[in-house]
Length: 324
Image 1 (cartoon, rainbow, N blue to C red):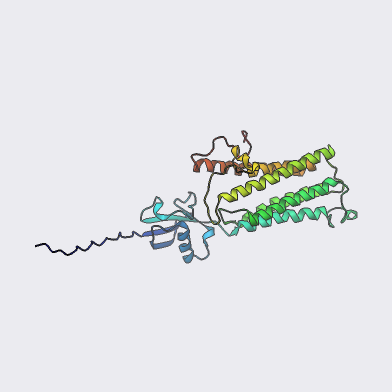
Image 2 (cartoon, rainbow, N blue to C red; image 1 turned 90 degrees about the vertical axis):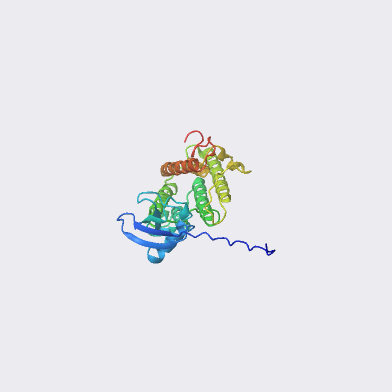
């Protein structure tokens, strides 16, 4: 005889969580540095770095490079353990990136230097030029205009660093600040010495050349700022999300149709305008060196875009439309 009672629902069996064992070896010597037991499968590389830091306090997460292969690329902090090509016993290799410093600190330091150094030459403080020129001013108006443009450029960079840029990487090696400052500060001093020299002569074509140069400079400064704003808006605060940059309603961003890194294109244009304005050889050399370096960066970003996005616009060039 059947009973009319209700059958109790069967209990759901919980899936057993498979924990990982993580072994971290020195990438150079292959010595075991750390063994982490019972690491959750959804742990990120960033979390593993924090665990590693607890056993080795001298290596804080920002200076750690964790890799699958001793000579391979560093894994991203957001990479998840269970999605990596490793077994339940995972072996990683560690490299020390050296002492780190924040990008904001680096940018503020390397941009403040040229601003201050240039003004020292502009005001002709003692021990730069012969004593009779101490604290005198140039009779050429282009010298004063050049000082305003140079100062505007670096004040803009400082403000962008504080209020516009969002950095995908929080830090960089401390040693780089010395290299960067030598580059920016040294060129600023070299340019300023000749532009503000008592024997400086204005451009050969006079006012017409200077006015054209000023228009180029200002146009490219506005363009550069517009691109920085557009790139900022692509990345939410605190995110490392990468998207394809496209033109916005701002006409200065329409160059995205043809170029992957128009911020470098406009930066080059600004310094070409400044070179034309001052007709000074050190400025031309600084522009050339900067162009070479920005081309290297632009090509790297362009390759990265092509690799990451299958639908990346095929017409774009890295820095110069249809050329480079």
